[in-house]
Amino acid sequence: MVFGLFGCSFKSLRRQKGIFLPSPKQNTILSSLFFLFEVLAHACFILGAWFALCYLRGKTFYKEFDTLIVFGFVFYTIAQVVGAYWCYLGWATPFHWGDRHLQSASLWCYYAAYLHLKFLPNGNIKNKAIFALLGLGLVLLFSYGGQLKEIHLPRLGA
Amino acid sequence: MRLLKRIFQILGSIKLAFYLLLCIALTLAIGSYYAAFYPKVFKALNKYLFLEWLQVYGQKNTDKIWWLFLLFLLLFGLAINTLICTLNKLAYFWRKRKQFTFREIIYKMTPSIVHLCFFLGLFGHLLSMTIGINQTLPIKLGKEIDLAAGVKGKIVGQNCVYYPLEAQQIKVKGLLKQCRISLEIANSSDKRLIQISFLHPVSWHGLSFYLDKVKTNDRYVCLNLVVKNDPGAKLTLISDAMMCMLMGWYFMVLYYPKRRKRE
View 1 (spheres, one colour):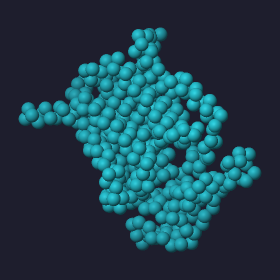
View 2 (cartoon, chains in turn green, cyan):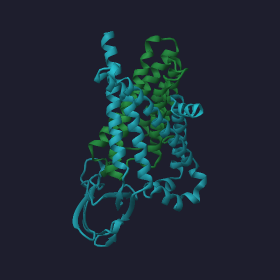
View 3 (tube, chains in turn brown, yellow):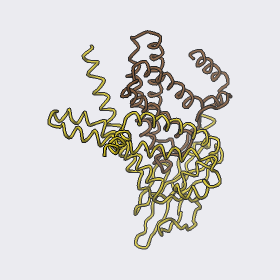
View 4 (cartoon, chains in turn red, blue):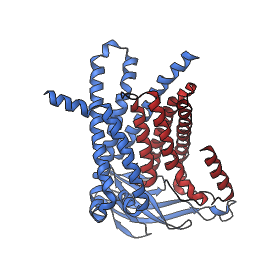
């Protein structure tokens, strides 16, 4: 996975398509806050998945992955709420029916399900680690799959 | 009576909430690809109320919108589940309130209040999609327009600012930066001149006026006036903000004392 990410990074340096052009609707602090919290949440989810993988491989020190996922969820919720305010001011609705918003809602529901897992009879730490690891696939697909088109690869996410 | 109690237990169980959330996540993921492949159909949902959209677009595209009905069914199930589960918990803590200090009881009730806020947020979305006014009109300077709820409007001024042509970033040159529209609005009893710009809507007599743009390409945009009366939006935004703050506080208290003890 790490090599894959490095590969994409090098490819993007060599064959990048350019910058995202500014839009009048991005000219607000809400836009900056939204991206800040979304990126923080992604970082927590990705790091949490990495720790979960280490835990599944027998390194018990890494059971802190749960804390990372929980705070990732909190940051993601803040991002969604800030995003809803931004959307309300800019697009006249708190939820926009488009692929980007639907995928964000999907990711939020997945991690909301993760939070409820501990209340189930089979919600042990091993199952939580597997769940956190599967979440990584969704994060990469939905949040970074769309960026593949920027380096001339087929677009997968929003 | 026992059967009724059993049904009530199942409807309010966390197990059901878990599976419903997973099914909703999957349905939203599938739906996002339909939205990506058929943007014309689904972007229209932002401009119409749901029943109007169903008549205009839904009937012709039943093969593309099936997931929406499944989503609404699952969300309805989740809303019922959340409400029952929350009320059960709140009733339990209310009965036990004398065993805890005020701070403890507030802390223990926080997840239930968060769930209640989530339920109110869902209800707000339902209101936004089903009732109110949602009108989108192209902006033409000097033309009189019939707006919703018997309001008449006239665009009397338009001032757009662009990025300077001598900007350092070549790609930004000549791009639209901001626009300000002067709109004269009047109903049978009142008249006012309002100024709207991107991200700065104005409310008047229960209607909200927004400036929107339709991108034709990187350089040229068409401006639209959006007139809305959305009874659910404020409920959604306020309950979501409450949910966010309470959840943040709850998890901070839950995780940080443990760390201090370990240290």
